[in-house]
Image (cartoon, rainbow, N blue to C red):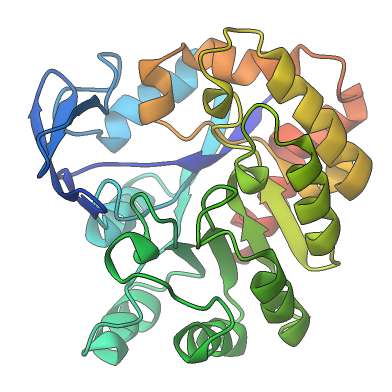
Length: 304
């Protein structure tokens, strides 16, 4: 079956920023934080210092992935222009989300370029404490003044609002504040990344979080779910168990496959990142059609 990958990142210039300061490429697919910590960011199959649309399309073609949703965050550095260029170059393969910092003094000019000039219909906010908004601004209330203004702006324009709120126990993991935002904007589509990023032993928190956010205008991708169980190897039984919980609480029609390329492919193959869920017993054939293609087609590609 054809697949839509609902969570992929392109990198023109690796210029990340987060809790450890600046993140810059240092060769061999690696990057170094300002603290001196070196991490593997890009697998050889996708490049050394950047991830081009051509490299991603090639990998997609090798795995019967028809389309991909290009998301962004400060982990790699915002890639708005590069994402827009990729969408124009490959309109049948990519749709992308814009990203911005709501605290920028020229926020309105930035948004005018992204949403008026470039025509983005999706906005992505990574607010996590490791490499998102709260990694360099500190605590931000997800139902506070700045975020409420961002929700209103997106809602008025019919945008899809994508959020990565990080992991349990982080100050960004604000389930109740996010629930308030969703309830305040019942006509806007929200997509929550990583099904709340559960790690081993966090079943109760996952059940509670998903239950509170199981609302009519909320969908979830499960990008990096397998990676978050490391060092557990393929076929990732804990990740499969968490997918069963998500299906039980949300329904298969509220879930979307995502890989979180490129970093997740540093630890395992793209085939395995797809296969642990595709080949499991979690979803029926009809449900797989929704999870791996049709829902993302409706939520993301149907709005261009």
